[in-house]
Length: 242
Image 1 (cartoon, helix red, strand yellow):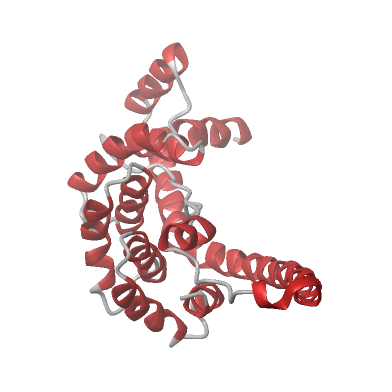
Image 2 (tube, rainbow, N blue to C red):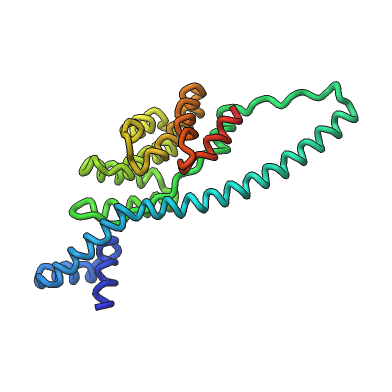
């Protein structure tokens, strides 16, 4: 039984190849009981993928909060260093001191952008292997290879909000910012979606990079209006730097 479950998981995750894959699919076709076991396992994985994101988000939120505390401490130390350095400069030649200019849009974008970590379980039908392969490319930073696979999956099922988010981020990585914004729009217009917070954050960053700060501020204000948002502190920090 344990071997069967492991082999089923390998199949559902798109990891079986060659003779092993052929033998497995033949066994599924020949053995109704085994086919039923595979279907039950697939249903379980789909439920985990559908609802597990909430648990993952909670864990990521806790990690993010810890990371933000460390980042704030480091930033505080840096600010103290800058303050001491500024005082030294003032003591030597105070008339040369000039207030620090606000960061440029490109600097803000570079300081705050990083791709969102996404994981993908297998799906039924023809999209199964494409989604698993797209997920592997995405996690390894090969966004150009992941993009067409995600797009084919989304064309097959336009309810896949996580895939839509992944497409938008891949387009950002490719520098296609307007296309990325268009992909984020359906998520921004929903009353509730598990990936709406992410869409708000990345759409705001697109506007920052395009030097459209009022549009970015409007989206960031939506984030900070909800203290439970995954990007609450990041949005506050970015607004403070405008």
